[in-house]
Structures are given as structure tokens and as C-alpha cells.
Image (tube, one colour):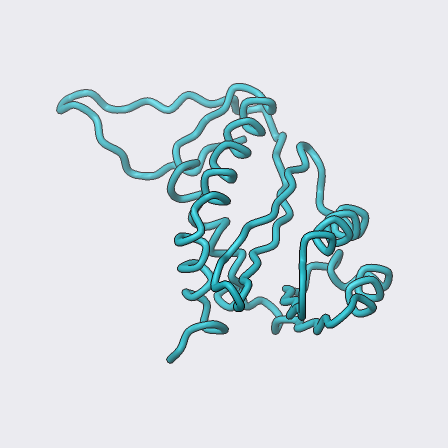
Length: 169
């Protein structure tokens, strides 16, 4: 719940003060998929928030099952090397889905992972300098801004295209 402090504006002579709870180690973990339908040239974001929880194979499997209910046509599934992504039952589920190719990213290559650009945008723009007083506030604000990003198809497409995997160069 510690804020990511960014430079801000304040009236001359009035130093901004950002109050935060020092003893709280509570957090919100997120799992998401950034989907580009090349047929319609539209990008979509699917996400789930997990308050005070680490993402494990259980959450990845549940999210993946729900996601496949929304996907149509061939799927190129790009994943980083998170341990939960490599769990045997998760890999088995993904690779047994119709028309699905699993593409694991090289070790520690966040610049290739398009979803990292979504997290970066959220952390450094709308959630910067946020010092929530409770976990509930953190969840509410995180969900609000994630949904705003979810509704911005042009931003999602640009975040996808920012990855070297999708750039035309």
C-alpha cells in the first residue's frame, strides 16, 4: 500500500505532503490478459484483482478457464516465466485448448511482455502518489482505473504495439 511517489505540482511555497500508513504490508495482486483480435484490429483487457493474495497456479488456472470462454479463433498465448505459469496443470490446460500456441518469453524480458506496459501505465499515471488508507480503498481505486484502461481500446492497442514482439520495425 506504499505509494509510488512521482513529481507533482503544488502552489509556490507549499510543499505537498503525502500521508501513508507505515505498518501496512497489504497489497492487491492482479492477473490480466491483453488480447488483440487481428481480424477486427481491436485490443481488449481482461483482468482480476486478488486482495492480499499472491498469484499461484490456482488463480492462473481459474483466470485462464474464464478467459477461454471469451476467446474465439486461433490464440497465441504469450507468457513470462512466472512459476505459476509453468505449473504442469496450467501448461496442460493451455496447450489442450483449440487452436492455441503457447509462446514462453525468455527469462526476465519485461520489455517483450505487453501486459507489463499496462502495469507500468497504471502505476506511473493514474495510481502514482496514491496513499490509500485501507485495502478496500486500494482495491476500489485499482479496479476503477483498470476499468478505465479496459475501455480505452486505442491505448491498449498502442501498449501492445509498443512491445518489440508486435512492432513493425
